[in-house]
Image (tube, rainbow, N blue to C red; front, side, top):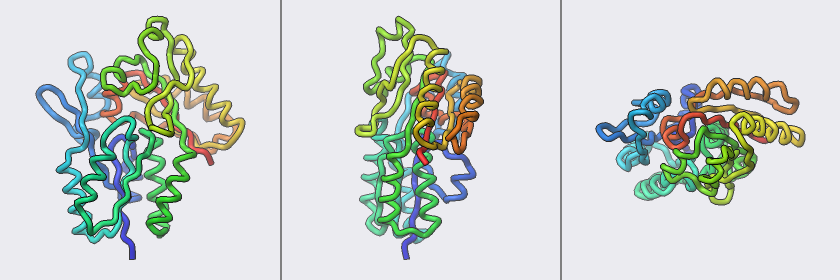
Length: 282
């Protein structure tokens, strides 16, 4: 009989209800200030990070190797035979490699580490799907196949207040920056499904136009297929709410959720003013 553990990290932006429902083991990233270190989402909130930007922009780090070791040891003690870990995109972080390395030290558990090629609600959607399949009693290998298929149906778009934070944190990917910023050109950013890095999906001039363009992208996608939609933000609740109000009126949107603030560690790299949308193809 397979006993399957489900592991992810704090950038998946799961609600407490989902964590409890699917018994998800969440590894916290670390947020590092000059004088103190915090566990993402556990010891610091997104708003505290944004509010402190004027004083200091922190750096971030992977969940500690000790946290990973402790988790796998605990799973062994609890009699788990298998584990599926779904991590933040390898194009944005080294957590995939860290979890894979630690899992190989625990041969009693058959582990599979999956690169979500996503962040926030995109990564979270994969975790939720995996949790549902585990709950249904599906076999380990079948679950992995199904979640990889599901990954093809997850699409992410977002805009940021400024590219400064993505550049500073080395997360700029293939998004073109400096000259466009001088001209107030705002990219609509997506994630390359091949390497999991940020790419420019489209670009327009001005903040208002970028949000309008993101709405048009959603509208065009919904003309073709049905989607479940989640709107998220990073210190951009008012604009995210306005987008949510527009999107929820569209046909073919089977569910539209205002998902709340992204994790503090994601906020460190995106800066204030992020508005994002996750579309899950039905």
